[in-house]
Amino acid sequence: MKTLALRLYGENDLRLERFELPEITDDEILADIVTNSICMSDYKATIQGARHKRVPDDVAEHPIIIGHEFCGKFLKVGKNWQHKFHVGQKYGVQPQLNLPGAEHKAPGYSFPYIGGEATRIVIPREVMEQDCLLTYKGDAYYKSSIAEPVSCIVGAYRCSYHFKAGEYVHQMGIKNGGSMVILAGAGPMGLSAIDLALHGPEHRPGRLVITDIDQARLDRAAQIFSPEHAKSCGVDLIYLNTGKAEDPVAYIKSVNDNKGFDDVFVFAPVAPLIEQASALLAYLGCLNFFAGPSKSDFKATMNFYDVHYMGHHVVGSSGGNTKDLQDSMDYAAQGLITPSVMITHVGGLDCVAEATKILPKIPGGKKLIYTHLSMPLTAISDFAELGKDNPFYADLAEICGRNNQLWNAEAEAYVLKHAPRLEEDAVI
Image 1 (cartoon, helix red, strand yellow):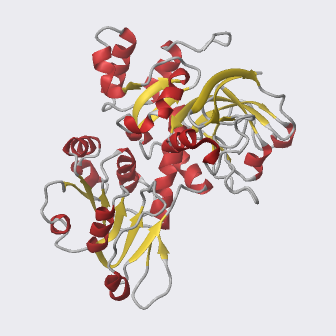
Image 2: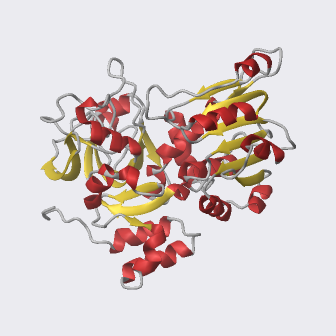
Image 3: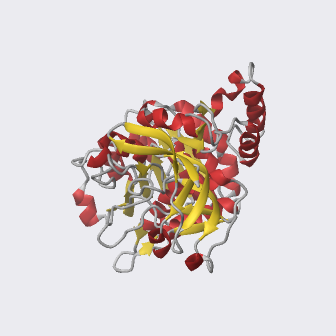
C-alpha cells in the first residue's frame, strides 16, 4: 500500500514523497493517520538532521518520517497482535519507547515507516512490545493528537511533591487545596495547564494565579476560563499582568494574602522568572521548572538559604509517560478537559514542510495537520476574514464561533468532508 509522507533526509531537507510501504509482518500493524500536531521538537530535528540525538546517522540514505503527535485508525493488524487490537480502532502512540540500548529511538525521529506526517504507516513491533500503542475512544481525532502535549502537563503535575516537616514521606502531585502560581502561564501550554487544574480528576489547587506580560493573552485566557467558572470548580482563579510591576514578587504575593505559594510553575525558560519563582515559594514549597531551555548551559539563581531552612525544593520533567498519555486521551474522550485550547492553526499535509522549517516564527500555539487534506496553514482567528470571499472558511468561522473560537469535533468533521483531498495519484 502506498503512503504520502514528509521525510527527513538531513538538515532542513524535508521532502513530501509518495512511496510503497512494505507488507506488514505478523508483528506489525498497518495504520491510517488522520491528524498530527506539529511540535517544536520536529523543528529541532529538521534543523539538526543527523546531529539530533534521535535521528539516525544514515538518514540521508534511509530517510525517516517526521512527526510524533498523531492519531488515526488501524487498517490491518498482524496476527500476533490481534488479541489486543482490531481493524477500525482509533489509536495514539507514546513516542518515548525507552528501548534498551536505543533509548533515544522514537517514532517521528528514527523510523522509516512510522511518523505523524503521513497518510499511512507501519507500526513496528517495538511500539507494541513497549506498551506504547494506546487505544482511543474519543469523538474527534485531533483530541488524541493533542494528548501528547497535554500528557507533559499531566506528568509535570504528578512529579511535583510535598511533605510535612519532620517527615520523610513525599506526597506526589500539586498540593490539594493549596496555593499555586504559573509564571508566564497564559500561552497555549498554560491554557491547557489551567484546564487541567480546574477540571482534572486528581489534585486541584484552592487558589490558582496566572501571570503573563501580554494582556491580550491574559484576556483570552480569562475568556476561555473565567474566574466565575473557576469558582464553580472550587478554585479561586486570578490573572495578573506583571509586565509593569516594579516588584513582581510582591505584586503576585499580594493576591495570596501576602504569602508564598505551595506550588510555583515556570512556563518560560527565562532566568529572572526562576528567580521570581524561588522568592514566591512558601514553607516547604515546590518549584516546578516546566519550560525546556534550548541551551544546555542554562542557569539561574536560587536562594539556597531557603532551600535549607524553608524546605524549598525543585523538580522538572520532560514529557509524560505512557500512563500520562493514556490518561490525557481518556480525559479528552470523557470531555473532562478541552485540549483544543492549545490549537491556533489548522492545515493539510502539503503545508507542513515549510511550516516546520519556520515554526518559531509562526505565532500562536499548536499547528494541527490533517494528513489526507490539501490546505494552507491557517490561523483560526483568520477564518472570519477569509470567509468574506470563501464559503469554506465562512463555515469554519461560524462553527468555531459557536465554540468560543476554539477548534472542535464539528469543525474536524467539516474539514474532513469539504477540504480538498490529496489524491493518491496527485503530483505534490
